[in-house]
Length: 614
Image (cartoon, rainbow, N blue to C red):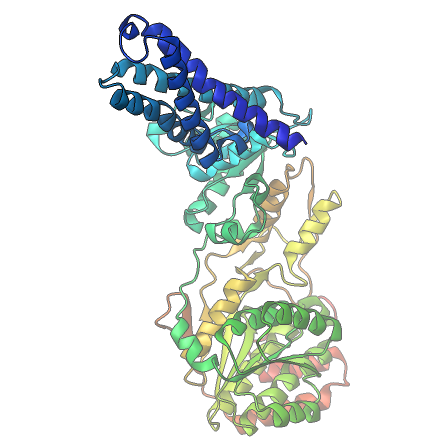
């Protein structure tokens, strides 16, 4: 009923606009119409009927009566012009031709202008009224400064102004285009360029800063975030264009998300050589060990689009494997997926898996990676990281896999931890195995990944959520960081370069101080470090060192065709001696941690034990 009433009311007004504007035109042209077909009331009535018929036809044709007045914009104004032209022109041409003489042109002009004014005026007035007075914003709305007065920024501001559900009020814009400075967009001022961010945030009492520049590079976003960090405002960002396009939410303001630590890294998207990757993955049986972990699950997600003939998800934890299986089956319903619950330490089980499925490409991501835990449980680190890798790599060799890619770590370089040392031994083992195998064995070494299980980022976020304090081990602690998708993309790409025996080193960008990371996370959460949330130093944990390295002293660095992937020169290793030392490791697993570490030191001379516990 309400819909019918609205459409009838809109139609009635538009028809009245046609007739009222015609009556006004008659009045203004009275002297010129004293002779001719419109001199009498009958002629005027017939002209009016023709105008009404033309108006009704054009209004219905353009569905003008179905447009909501509150959202009148350019499209509606164009429709009004299209409806006004037939309403004024049709009767003018008919009477000019039938009457035997041309009517005064100003009659047409006055009538046309009158129709457009009477149709558009009330709509625009109602739009202004709704925008200004009908908003039901919460009393304690946040004041927002939008960086970017382009199409995205104006879309966000417009949605905030019109959407009562959004508890944010846009105050103005920041834009680097000098032409826009001191101008107004949607009635909001453009205060100036990025150098005005700090002073505007303070003078305008800004609660939130929204970076609305989805098309600029990650480097530029990082620079803007660093500028905004100097303010007390909470930072938000509009995701990149690809994320916006894939978003199911149509409201522009709801697409805004919190600035994340990943945005601070400032690295542009990776250039991927799809042809080379497809060449070694497509139509192949691919095995991912540790498929339920952070790196393993992302490997599965990124390998699947290259259409392997079968994807094997191998893991020890049933819950994590079930989770990634359900995700993969939903996302890639046509991909043959096989889930395998197995422990890489169980040689017989791994052998059976290879015999049954004959994987051609193996990504070995299964490992114990938590440094302090492995310091307290060195035998478990050896069993999983050394003997687990030995089992999987020897089966890859035995069953004729094409490639074997070991996921390694920067902690394997001059290690100070049991975990790092065991990963270095794993690297050494596959390098020695490569010399006598048809399988191409290679390792990919990189640093910390943001957001992985056991990573410092989730722990910091949890501490901030609880009100602090945030605990940092040492003020000078430095680490390399990458996002999980970024690291995995480079791992898969590095696999395409493998000739056998290499250790690929990923460009991790600049190292990041953990203390600075904690400060940034606190500020990004809308708090002030040491004021709202305290930061405490807990001391370096067992097995940790202040900084990580990516190369051993024996490895020289050479570049590849990819600007983010480098090769460490293969180290000459004697497989017989290495296997002898690994057998010694097997015999000391039941001994005390110090005795185990002594054997590790003999195997990896660069290992220095800095553990605080024995």
